[in-house]
Image (cartoon, rainbow, N blue to C red; front, side, top):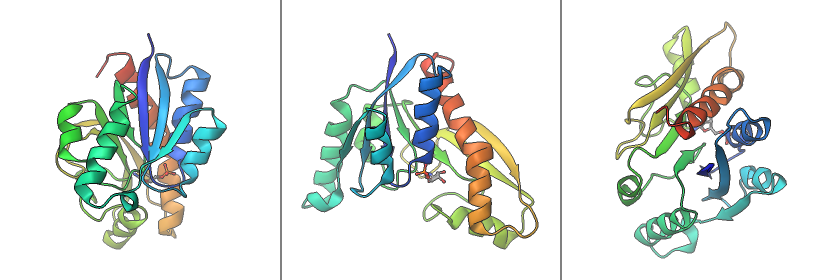
Length: 198
Ligand code: GRF
């Protein structure tokens, strides 16, 4: 029985697309993306899900009187799909502790740096890449890790290094990290998980 995967997104969804393509190609051979949920109604990732015939849903904090009510709605919304694995693919909302407790070692996240460098609160979008260039490191990359109560603090699953090149801008570096690292190690981590290897 294929493992049930729910993907949480906030933006363009290129990591989601890598997962969709990996399921389609059979690289992820024992998993099915049963739903994509975003906190952002305008997330192109939701279009990608619809184009792939996957249930796409928006659960937005704006629709709830409090963060606590949103957190409850998010946990209910995700749980309704009975996921074996929850993947945060560019999801910019803090995962409620109740969700971490409900799905121990069943939530994974992709972060665009080599944790423990350039991670934690505020390190999202272009910010990790800007910090990499400001510090002048010669190697960066991406990390897939289990999600715990902290921010980018869970057990590391996979990492892949990417060279920083002379003349890189944050945008150029972000694209290289996505192409050469994120879109490789996230599908690999999901494949390993659904095959019971991690
Ligand atoms: C990626 O850089 C990912 O590492 C980070 O957020 C970005 C999401 O991009 N978590 P996309 O929505 O997958 O294109």
